[in-house]
Image (tube, rainbow over all chains, first blue to last red):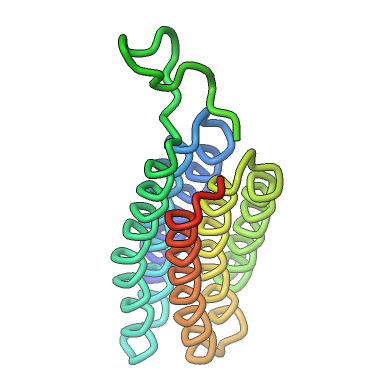
Length: 113
Length: 90
């Protein structure tokens, strides 16, 4: 029973990783890509690692794995926030489809670096 | 299909996903997309490390390695963001 549960958790984690990678490739703009990977990685890694911890049974090692999960839950959004803030400070504006909001050069053309 | 094979298959899929996100890491238009790709690869390799630890039945060693890897990945991303903010090199 425990193996089935941990296998299921790891499979869900891998699926979330796949969707994050898909978002990283297909989304048009830097912010969308960061948006996709930031969320999917955090949850994907957490589910996969909790699955590994479950499979490992109750021991100090599982506690360490759960600490990694806690760390990733705290660290990943912080890192994503830091990059996003750094991008916004450097005048990288989000990409908008169609006419941009009046009175601003807000994402006129697709952002080229 | 024992649990060992299952872990091997899962880490194989993760390895493939790392290659896919490496495409964005290399071809990413700018410096920013590359940081996001590297951050993505870092989180994936943490999970691959733990899975490999389970496969080789040496979990205690691999958990420490993956913990250190997660820490370093986080600090690297922060350093890149801080550099970007100060220097403004896109």
